[in-house]
Image (cartoon, rainbow, N blue to C red; front, side, top):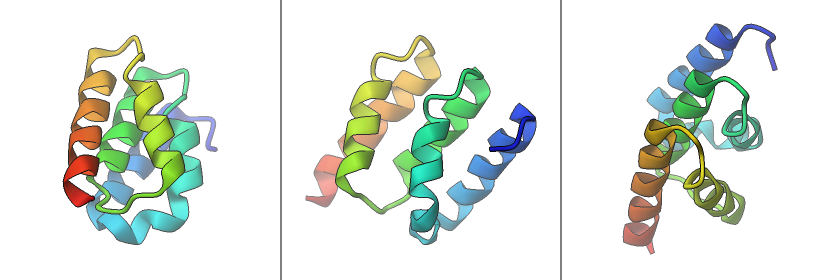
Length: 88
């Protein structure tokens, strides 16, 4: 991961644009969802929420994000879980 949180945030935002094509980056996104910088966690969680790609470890990360101190992270995680249910 880049040491600059702005770069990490931007990377997650760019991956959000390609949705399921970002699937190879899921491991990095899941790490970013636990980043110490709130903006990075928000961007990563929103990206995972909007990927239109799902795998079991994403479910665990979204569930864990429901306990995040950031309201925006919790909201993105809840939305992602709602969408998860619609795909299955």
